[in-house]
Length: 209
Picture 1 (cartoon, rainbow, N blue to C red):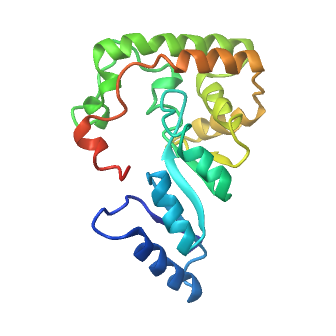
Picture 2 (cartoon, rainbow, N blue to C red):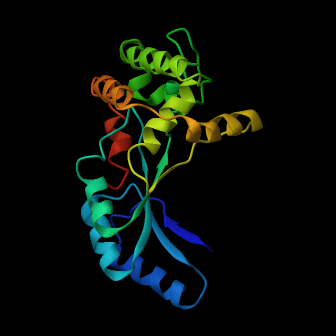
């Protein structure tokens, strides 16, 4: 296995034990690299001290930037890569979701504070800015959102999900979008005003932070 993730930190099992077990798997030739997902900075440090952590997976996008202050500096210090899931804000940053959008009753977004009516309305200001910058670069909203991520760190890899070939091609096209410093500054400023928490408290407690 090229990359073995612990996708959620188990609070009942010391992370040193997890890292030690993966280290044994690596020594046996069953696993090549060790990854963590949604792990707190101190947890990453403890695991890395036992077995080198190759990458950490975490939600990160223009509307979810909570890892910038503590986790990203630790990853940079230790030489660990960052894999970012939900880089398009669960579809919101693409501009295809409006205040009139209705999700299927089983859609996870129905439970997220940022998709509640007031927060959604407020966050459309960010989408509008993304659209304006996309128009300037002859790009799509999704491409600008991904280009913003790629501009943050060279060792960052976004993983946008898609079931359609043309969307995959669109996402790949983000590598050709070169945002100016003015673009980045405007996006950062707008992103600072995102309304609503990432998850409800009941879910946030389960992320291993």
